[in-house]
Image (cartoon, rainbow, N blue to C red; front, side):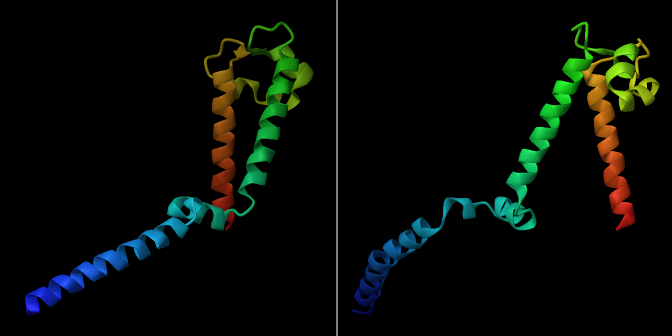
Length: 127
């Protein structure tokens, strides 16, 4: 008899408890399922604005480089940099790592990444 009571109890729990658990799972918003996403959103509530601003900056720089590349060869010569990109011209020899007299996209990208890393290092040092 006690075995029948236990089986009946388990059956009742499964039939009543399972829909309750399912209902709780369905009520959780999909965006809350990712603890990483939740952490990012809490740490950076204005993340979308920041990303939009970064995109604007990248687009603006891309347009500047296109205007500076007067001959359309996909790279920036020293003369092009001096005429249209004075900040790049000041550091031309440092950016031109293969010393071919022109700055490729890869060289410009590498220089930008090094500059970003240096800026982040300075920020951490000053905290």
